[in-house]
Structure formats: C-alpha cells, structure tokens
Length: 246
Length: 235
Image 1: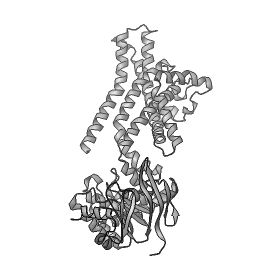
Image 2 (image 1 turned 90 degrees about the vertical axis):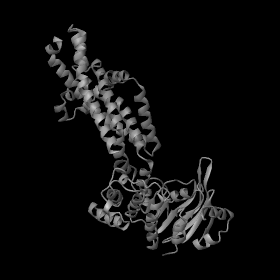
Image 3 (image 1 turned 180 degrees about the vertical axis):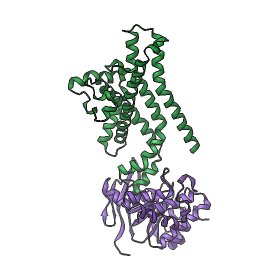
Image 4 (image 1 turned 90 degrees about the horizontal axis):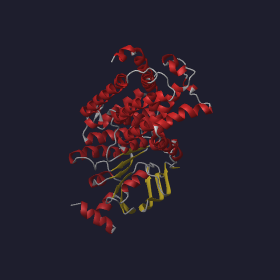
C-alpha cells in the first residue's frame, strides 16, 4: 500500500441536460481500499462509478487514475479501461460467446495474451468463482448468480488495478446474492482496490474500509463502516438508514 | 406456350445474366451497406454525417433515377466502372470485362441503391444488441473496431438476416430495370425484345420471364423462413 491515491476525483460536476447529477465531487481512493457507495436511487452513485472509467464523460473537474488524467475517447482511454475492471447490474455477458470465451476475449484481443494462456488463466478464474463446470455454456443457460460470477471473472481476467461494481446484486434473485457477495468479499480480503455501489449493507459492514453516502448528486458523508452505521452524522443518512435497516 | 420452348436458350441466358447481376450487386450492397452502417454508428460526428447523407440520398431517390444517372451520366464524366474489370472474376462473370460499360454500371447502380437499405436493416440489427454488451466490451478496453468485430456485429448479423433477405429479394426484382438502361440480354430485355421486335405474344413471354425471377426469389424466401424458424426454436 502506498499513500498516492489510485483514483483521485477532484471537483467533478456532471450534468445530464438540466439535471445536475454529480455536484462538486471530491473523492480519493487508495490502493487496496474498498469503498462502498450507498444512497437512495437517483443520488448519482451509479454515475460516480461509471465516470471513473469514463463510460460517462464528466462536465467539469478532474479524474486521475494511477497518477494519469483520464484521456479522451480513443486508444489511450481503451488502454486505461483495460486496467479498471467493471461489473454491471445486468451482467452484460456477450450472449453469442461461451462463458470461457467471454473471459478470454479481453486478454486475447486487448492484452494480446496467447489463446492457450488466456484459456488456462480463464479456467483458473472460473474455478475461483466456482463455475468452472459452466465454461462451455452460453450466458443464457446460467442462473443470474452464475452469470454475475462469470462477469466478475471476465473483469478479473484483465488483471485490473481496480474493480468497479455497479449494483452487482440488484438484479439477482435473493438466494443468489450471497454467492456473488462471497466472491466480492474474498476479492476485498486479497487486497483488490474496489469501488462498490450497492444496497447490501451487510457487505458494506463486512468488507468496506470506507462508506461513502451520496444523496442528490453530492457526497453527504464519508466514514468507516462501524462509525457510519452506528452514528450517521447527517440527517439524510439517518433517514436513509432508518428506512433500510429494520 | 410454344414460345417458351422455341426461345428457351434466350430465357436461360437471360436468367444467367440477371443472376450474375444480382449476385454481384448483392455482394456489393452487403459490403457497402455494412461500411455505411459502421459510419452511421461511428463515434466521430463527421463520419456519422457522411453515413446519414448516403442513406438519405439513396433511400429517397427512385431507383430509375439512380439507374439513369449511372448508365448515362457517369460515362460522360469518364466513369465506366472499369475498376470492376477484376482479373479472374471477369472470367467467371464475362460481362464484367466487356467493352460496353452498361452491365458494370447497372451493378454500381443496384449496389449503391440497395446498400442504403442494407445499412438500415443492419442498423436495426445493431440496435437489437443490448447496449450493455457494447459497454462491457468498452470497459474491457476493446477499441471501437474490436467492439464491432467481436461483440456487436456478429450478433447484429443474426438479428438482421431476415430483414436483409427481404432487402435482397427486393433488389432481385429491382434488377429488372437494368434491361432498360443498356444491359443487353438480361431477363427483362429478353421480354422486351421478344414481344417488341420479335412480335411474339405477350402473355406467354411474360410468364416465362416471371418464372425466371421466381426461381431466384422464392427459394430465397423459403430459406429465410427456415432461418427464422430455426432461430425461434433456439430462443
């Protein structure tokens, strides 16, 4: 662990037309840190997650990853994105490719790994997330939990410096949530830098180094998980927690 | 109906010319149409504008005008489609290599016109691929071209194959115009010659010509039905 932040978000604003979705956001994420972003829907937490690899461009401000300002759309941005894994709410597996092909596409085409090496590494990752026996199936043949674990393996196959999770369990049936969270928790323990947008408070308590609470496009509160859940400072956070924790 | 037997060689050679015209134009239209579709979804605004302009022009102009322009205007500015005189290919398709430019110009006209429709069918297919998959591909670091080649287009083709087939069927029927713009010996010009200068009865001749077109279009339609059914089962 070093002290230079891996992700450095400074004075970021984003507008969707008249809608000010990110308002003067400042956030630093250190290597190895697990930051969980929570907040009511429409608070801008997904957008925050998506601007970090520039899937959404920002209106003003600066985002630096690993010391470099995010480049404009093009080859340099593609290279940067290959260093940031992303897991989506709706899995977004490539429907015409098998699970193993999903996992090896990036390494072969972007990292220029040999297909045999990528296959070997891909199978290792699939075993790690517990779906090695599904390698030759197509995404539609898998359960939601299995698909999301495959998507995590696909992102990890790029050997990323950080992982972004955009509500990774929100589209899952309840009984499949834990299998995905288990994979994420073990990743966190191994020291992966993670930004996780989620509604899973259990995961936030267990795995987060820091909780960021967002509302109306602003970071309202930042604290360690014990601190945040025991003694939320802002009225917005208190209100939010009272609604979701029973 | 004796005409059909009496002139069977002319019907057969007319069919062969029309078939060549359609095959070459279909290949051309698929290639050009894919390129235009890529332009239309490109992240670079000027390229998108070029793609949109192309579709606007060729989708909205009557084919007769496009044919007229290609057959009679292009030669006046020195364009005879000589780039289509491709070695080996002109052995297989003799008409490509002839001195008279009209067959080549008809291929160009049909290609340009049909490509606009191919582009739109393909774009409908591209829109059928969930945007999230393209986003996931971008997040892996795939470039725009890699994204198209490995993620979007393979799935877009599948979704677009039935509408594309309809475009090609329409093109086969449209090819009948070529006979009136200088192409000698295709199915429609055979009909014109037999009934006009030849003085043969109109109805049997037209039945013969129709059969020629149906031989191309009906099997293609049946093939598309089968593909559609197979896909319905796979789903």
